[in-house]
Length: 251
Image 1 (cartoon, one colour):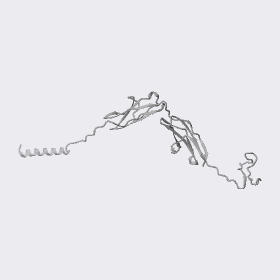
Image 2 (image 1 turned 30 degrees about the vertical axis):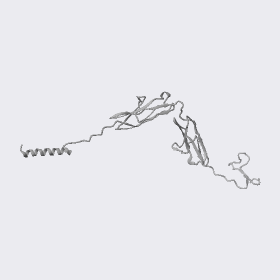
Image 3 (image 1 turned 45 degrees about the horizontal axis):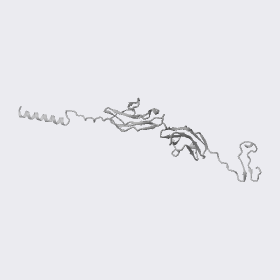
Image 4 (image 1 turned 60 degrees about the vertical axis):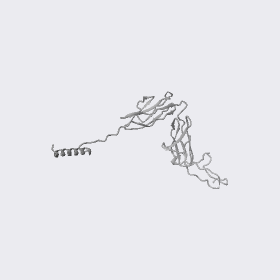
């Protein structure tokens, strides 16, 4: 091979190598990051409930999605418990001591949370309403008192609610007292009772507020008087409502 031909071959090889180094004449791809197995960020907490109540366990995890959840009771999968939160059916004393954990999985692997212990306390009781509040009717400007009572393990907390959604911040006793009632106070009142083992809400008590009748001012210079009743006799069936003057004579 002549020296000129050799130079040409070397030149072409150099150009080809340059093109490959710059990405020309070929394709490159960025490798995807390795998928990460789930990591439990929040483990479920142990719960204490009364017999007949439910317990709720929650967990949170991170990792490449989608993440799937499977709750286990005493290391056995619970049918249908495939969300990050699990609420048990009403428990019995036989459930006390059970261990609950969650298995979180994705395409890269799986991880299991720490177990949480369920305790069923036979000496505890969630609240129950023993005295429902009753309807009241008052005139505007008067006071209204709505009474309720509840049973359950102390300490019981009370919170009165107006028309189902309006929480009355200062109304936290078994009895609700409303002073100087106005027409805007008319509506339904209920009370939410809570303790460490659950809650109960009362039925509604309806407060009716009537417009107060106009005041009748007693005429001056009278010993006594009473309002006529719109007929020929008063409630004693003896007088049509005449006013008695100060000298004792009828007008």
